[in-house]
Image 1 (cartoon, rainbow, N blue to C red):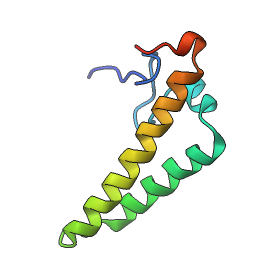
Image 2 (image 1 turned 90 degrees about the vertical axis):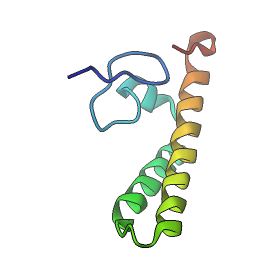
Image 3 (image 1 turned 135 degrees about the horizontal axis):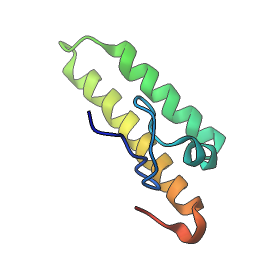
Length: 82
């Protein structure tokens, strides 16, 4: 089993979490809420027969997750990235 790493800083991250705890704490609260809201909507959508709806949920989550990762990277000292 390979270890999961934080996409913002490269530190170890727990399975099932987007970022490590330190980086998640650097993401603005509204953006954290958007990630959680879109993740829950995607998980609840479940019906693969409604493909356009499911793809919309995935896209919304990925947009929020990417924005959160970018925010954490920018908050790191020197705006460092792995």
